[in-house]
Length: 314
Ligand code: SER
Image (cartoon, rainbow, N blue to C red; front, side, top):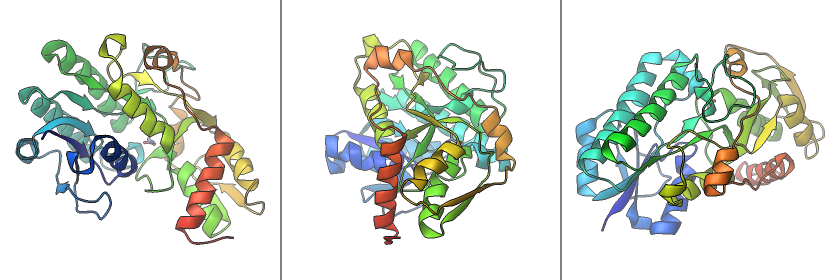
């Protein structure tokens, strides 16, 4: 029986994508993997470092892998702390995945790109064809990803697809090392301590998305008719845009005493290099992208679920 391999399965997206894939394709048909053993996702789980091409190949052989959801990556802020590791994981890891997919003639590779492919020279509300001059190692690695995905499709007819995710908000697994992490951290702090210090200015507007919509985007794009697709991994997907000031106001609807303060650090420069909004017309036209959650619905669902998880009714 062929199977689907998920790399980075213990991460923010992987921990929610893996159960969604298991629901669609059957539990044992989805092999979770990551750099270390985790309890969730449940087995089948393989400890796998994507920079180890031989081990990756043996996992593909052993489990008769036919598709890979390649989520393992170092995000923007952590990437600036360790650019060398980011290159290793994001560039060499991606190459290993595409090569094993080519050699084993896998049916599909799904790999996310990001709004971090944009840079300070990007015009407002960019589409797929706009200038990309990112300033972070993470962004540079993801531009490489987009180009390499198109190359493997054109040269080797490999079906590689992906979307440019904005910042993703979720209550299950915390993001690690991203610039948009404040939009998740604030919920934990608002519930647990009643106050939060954002590491960006209050007027920093960035594109964001709730996890349910992020999962839908990936699954819908994976299942879209290939002849409808104009792009491989360049699809912009937009859902929400808000500033910390607006997020704070929305949280105060549920936690009226919540106090916010602002102490911008190095991550402000990264946030400032990304666009405030992105144009996702192509995703809407080509494969029917349409998000479900607006700011109020997202905030309500986050607080409901985090209160249960953190076991507080405060
Ligand atoms: N959430 C990511 C980051 O902040 C953007 O893709 O790095």
